[in-house]
Amino acid sequence: MPKIKSLPFWGLTFASCLLPVGFAQAQPELRLVVTANRTATPVNQSLAAVTVIDRETLANAQTSLLTEVLQAQAGLDISANGGYGKPSFIYLRGTASDHTLILVDGVKINSATTGTANLDDIPIDQIERIEIVRGPKSSLYGSEAIGGVIQIFRRQPKNQVQPRLQWQQGSHHTQALSAGVGGRTGKAWFDISAQHWDSQGYDVCRTQTEMAGCYTDEADADGYQRVSGRVQFGYAWSLATQVQLEASYTQGENAYDGGFSNQGHLRQTLLQMAFEHAATERWHHTLRAGRYSDQADEAKDGVFNSQFYTHREQLNWTQTYQVHPNHKLTAGVDYQQENIDSLVSYAQKSRDIWGLFAQYEGQAGAQDWQLSARYDDYDRLDQEVTGGIAWGYRFSPQLKTYLSYATAYKAPSFNELYYPNYGNAHLAAETSKSAEWGFKGALARWQWQAALYETRINDLITYDAFTQAAANVDQAKIRGLELSTQRRWLHWQLQTSLAWVDTQQKTGVYTGKELARRAPASARVDLDYYGERYRLGATVSAYQRRYEDSANQVRLGGYGVADVRASYQIRPDWHLGTRIANVFDKHYETAHYYNMPGRTWWLSLEYRPQM
Image (cartoon, one colour):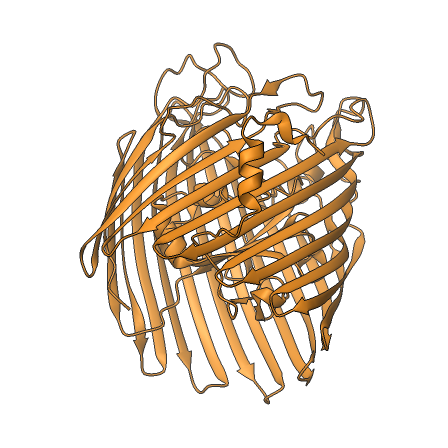
């Protein structure tokens, strides 16, 4: 494990985490989380490390970029190839960037070609809450869920019809305007929203020669623009039966520094239908159908040169049966069809994926447990069987511990299998085994959570210089510790979190070296003060040094940044806010040669009707 002395203020921060302090998103005892078990479960009863980011927290963050919200979470590290809208990579508990499953209202949005998702293309204004489940969940969701699952739930109105409006202005000639209206009337509900986001950006690449895809002979600002819209409609025939339809569309332009291309045009669509029915008081089932597509057209100085278009049809049927008040069975079937259309010649352009899963949850006295298993059949690939077991014990209503063990996998992407001069059609899936020991506690107005875990990953896919193609050649061992505490008292709120992760490559010439781009240690403190009509807040976060390469020869320095924010309630429904990020204008990189934003400012005006 990394040593605490590796950051100059570790001692102070660690000491603060042992105090009964709190954070801005304090989670009520009865708050439900859906992602951890694929059924609604109280957060305090979940046998996993779970974080829920609610609508209030998203609004108070005063940012339009989802990656900035996620970066604040313990155990979740993000590296970015530049600033606004540029490719970003999530490392959840030290696992690879394509080892985290990303869902939007139950629909998978990981790219079929790269395995990752473009999170900054999702407007925060459309989001109701975010659930982050750390740890393997392939036994419920299948591929990608080695490090965990992040599920984004879009707005669903709860009250009468109400409009909303937000305007933002910021550094680098950034402007954002979003508007929406939603509500319930009788048995029906709806939500309609749209957003325009435009930033001139800054020159994201600092190198003087061609390195890592960067070119600074293009000494220009690399901007980012997007337009998005969403429509949702739902109807409940009764308390037992309801249907919901949803459609969203995003179109954007991205400029960057690159030799082959330096302009990108994106289009993303998501269509979904969900039907829920309670056949009896004990038996409930959900049928969900969805389609997600993303298209990326690339050009060099205005001359079109490539296109990638992927789409995924999804169908899921889940049934839950309450055998006994303390015993529940959940089972279901998942189907996916992935398709790719590109100017690049792929040997295969489609595949079908079938998955069957089952889960049993039980409780007796102070103990509860969970058993889950899943079988997946990938077209033209091997079958995968994964499972998980978890046990929890409640010492008191305020203190609980849990132990878990699970296997997981990540199927090779289309690029890894079939991309010309790189793909290998004989690749096997990456597989993992993980164990975790966690604690959750609450006392008076403060709560805390801790987790110790170890993950071993086999058959990691990387480029093999000998075969000049992708190959299953690497193994890795990851150990980590996460701590967070939270409390609200009087007019104050405080959140502190710490994360350590020790990543080691276990095979090949780089045995014993750290995995690239993962910071071994990180810390964050958020302090907010609430007045009658105003709010003041500050954040300090720090990250230990990391390495850009597998050989650990290119070192990216550790860094610390501070942010401040303030908001004022002009009228009951009108809020004025401001935020200064990276107050001391710290220069740092999370990917070699790519500049991160320096000091930036935001000003916002929001119409938010009182509920």
